[in-house]
Every structure is written in structure tokens, then in C-alpha cells.
Length: 343
Ligand SMILES: [Zn+2]
Ligand SMILES: [Zn+2]
Figure 1: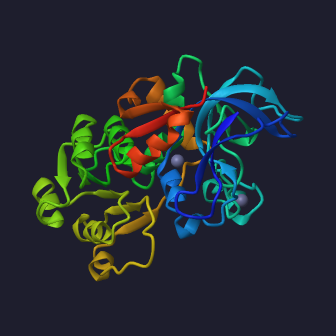
Figure 2: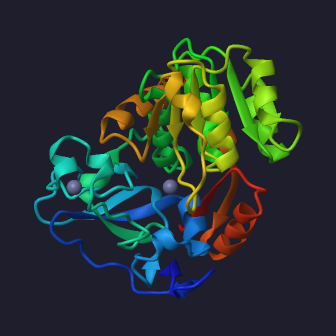
């Protein structure tokens, strides 16, 4: 089968190779015939060979945002059966560490990921642990089911802490997950939503998906422009940008007692002036992945009840042999969600 792999420990290092399809799944695993697999920001970070991903297995088949059909099951598998249509949770928790034991499996100390530590979904077939498979109704399109993993991050971002209901919020960064967060926040009853980015195409999309104000961070002073839109400051500031300037502004504009949710990690050390943050009683929350599987349950409801339609966020569906083109478009910021079709 054809597979898109990371084969070299270097920038790019990707290769489209003919490899042997996985055999019968081992105990606890299911063999998935991949329907669609999305290109994620993590895949771009793997392409760019950022330091925090250099522990990954190489060579490895990339792709962790997957939908597909269960083709075979290994010994002891009970969560799924042959013929089930599934979406894939990308975190494989160990179930044994201190965090797992306390119910924080999404921040497991020993998390492994398909497409990083084990072969992922940019191929016709992949063997995955049953514990990360989520059965989806057949009436959900394969394209949509492949987007549940990133959509789960958006739903987690919207529901964490004090949530969004009745709140004025800023969403900084309008990549696919930022846009999904705008949609989830709208569906979950946010009051005013302010979106920021420097990509005009994405800001245009943010307006279409429910943002009331869209601010280009390169036009004028960011803090001033947020206060123009929300004179009392936002109740919640969700940051996907990982930019020091955005995080500093978050702490400076959030209303007293408000919340900052950090969704993306700055690449290195950043400097922040936090004196006023303490005096105003802010809460800062770091978020990672999705709650297993509480977030999936809530995300499914939004999709099934048609309160969120993820389809407009798909900008490209490419055959596997054009996956490189997908990476090029995503790296250039000319895309929303890109799906790879390995069938
Ligand atoms: Zn992802
Ligand atoms: Zn664990």
C-alpha cells in the first residue's frame, strides 16, 4: 500500500512509499481501512522537525485525524466489531500513571499517538488500539468523522473552566481549530465572540462561522481594538496563537476574575508581565487534547443535532499521492482543513 511517512530526522523528511499493509491486528488492536485522514498542525510541526517532537518514531506513517471502517479485530477486542465505522481519538493513555488514575487520561504522562509513536492514517490501512476507537453512526460523512479529533479540542476549549454560555470571548488564532471553537462557542451560547488572526482569508471565514468582530493583529494596537469591541474586556480569552504578544494582551484585557485558556505552547521561553494579572484574580488554564471521552459525547451531540456543521471548513480533499501538495498549502496558510483520501 502507499503510505506518507516521516523517514528522516530533519526538516521535511517526508516520503511517499510503497510499504507492506499491516497484517492481522495484535491483541487489543483493530485493523482500520482508512476513509479519510486530516492534516493537522502537529503534522506541520513534524514536517518542520520542531524540538518537542524529536522523540518520535522514524520511520512512521503520519496522520492521527482518522475515520475508517473496522476491517479485522485482534484478540480480546470488545469496543468495536468488524464493519463498524469509527473515528479516532489520538491520545493513547497508559491507564496506569498518576494522571490516568485520577481521571486525567488526556494528560497521561506516557501518552502515545498514532502518526507519532505508532503508524497512523496516511495509508489505506492502519492497526490501532481499540481504546482510542469511537464508533460513529453511518449517517455521518467520512469527511466529518475525520474531523472529530480536532473538533474535540474546540469543544474542550469551549467547555473548560467557566465555559462560554453568556460570556464575551476572544478567540486568538483562526486556524481550523480556532474556527471550530468559534462554531462550538456559538452553538453553546456565547454572547459576543471576537476573533483575531493575521491571515485575512481565515478572518473572513471566522466572520462566516459566527465571530461578531474580526481583528487583524497587524492593523492597529491589538489591546485597543479588543477594548473597542468589548469595553469591559472579555470574560474568557482563548489563545491558539502561542504568540507572546497575544498572551500578554490576554492577561491585560480579560475582565477581573476572568479566564485565559492556553491552547498552544510557545516554541521556547517567552517573557510576560503578569503583575496586573494577579491583582485582578485571573485564572489561567492550560488545555491539551480532549477529555476521554466526555468531550467526545458533547462534540457528537453538537454534530448530530446539526448545531455545528464542520463541512464548510474542508478546503481540500486530496488523494494520498498529492499529500505533499496538501502540506505545501497548509504550510503557506492557504488552507482550512485538508483531508487525505487514501482509498
Ligand atoms: Zn491533530
Ligand atoms: Zn497514563
